[in-house]
Amino acid sequence: MRIKELIKNDAGFQYIIDSLDLQSAAGRRGMLNTEFCNDPATLETEWNRLSEAIRATNDIPNRRYYIDLRHCLMCLHDLSGTFASLASHTPLNEVELFEIKNLCYTSKAAATAIEGLALTPTLPMPDCSAVFAILDPDHTGIANFYIYDSYDIRLAPLRRELNALQTSGGDPMRISELLAEQAEIQNEVCLRLSDELYPWVDTLVNTLNQMAYADGLLARAKLAIEWNLVRPAIGDVTRYKNLFNPRLKQRNEEMHMRYQPVSIEIRPGVCLVTGANMAGKTVLLKSIGTAQMMAQCGMYVPAEEATVHLVQGVATSIGDDQDEMNGLSSYASEIIKISNILADCRQRELLVLIDEPARTTNPVEGKALVQAIIKILEQSPSFTLITTHYGQLGSTCRRLRVKGFVEDLDNIPLTPQSINRFIDYSLTEDQSDNVPHEALRIAAILNCDSEMIALAEKSLQTT
Image 1 (cartoon, rainbow, N blue to C red):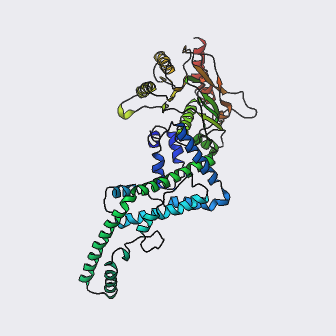
Image 2: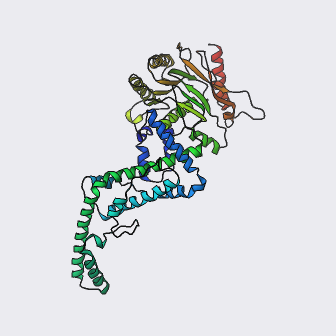
Image 3: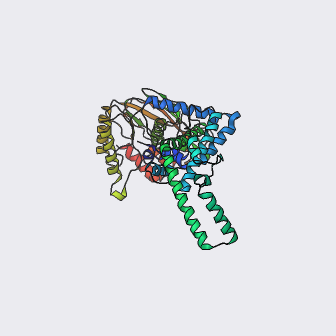
């Protein structure tokens, strides 16, 4: 699966991709076509390249080469359509020939900048000098292109006569004849040049792709530096020290709110995550899913330290999936998605992230469904995290609990605006089969209807 498919179902990962400072449409196309990879050697190679790109980006003495390279990438146009025409022997026009010449010129300048940054082994650029020579018969050495006189011996005398007539206001009929003759000759030249360029189409495609890749690589490096991302290791388990959600962290910082990263180890099998409402369980699942996609698409990840177990895919059921256009309720949409996840887990090793399954149906059947989901996933090789408010599930699977509310902080009033500061989002191992009960306390903190809360407390005391 490619990034452009992954971001359709993961807003967090889409935020990451949209945050990349790509300089060209070709660079974005290349990034969106990046494959989700589970081959360790391929990913290690990609992370090595990213490491070199980070070094080069931070290379202050050679900063001018970095700026030159970024400028080259800004000049990059997506010529995939032009190359498709060339590969099918469709004659190119003057504009398309200019674009090809400009690509050759730009790639040469990019190669010079890449050499200055000591990135040539990481970003080898194909040699397009032969193509440039075809499009620069007068050896001007510049990117501009037109149908030079030297392409056809008939052009120079024709253009001299045409210029003289146009300057002196000569016979309009003769001018029209000369313009038609010139256009015919130029078309012949374009056809001949297209034939000469045809053997070089693979080189041109490789050059465009390598320039697009360079754009994506520098963008990933810049993001890793600005967000303090870390290179992951590959292991038998997934382990994050101080994993953070970039989007939420940035929002909290803008609002001058505290942000607490979370450390977690994810092992084969099923792990239940419990905790009070507002304790960050859903954010945790989203952060883990986004980090996994980042790692397996050749990026660094948002954590202080990270070890990632490579999987064949990320399967999620997070949030309200109600689809009114298809006539599906929240429950129907959710249970179909979970059913598809279970079927997929029987075939492949996945990272499975399910947020409060069966929460929108009645609790008796909901609890039975959660028990069934756990039992099936325990039999698969996947790495599964399930958040739930259901207790007494009778499963022996691993459990983690969000620590939740802490003791009142000195001199800080507890209000809906400050409640974030009173929650400890860290995880602790939990051997019990119970879940926290803090719904009424949260309702009180949020200044909800006091009679409702009082009646609910009374009801709890009588059950």
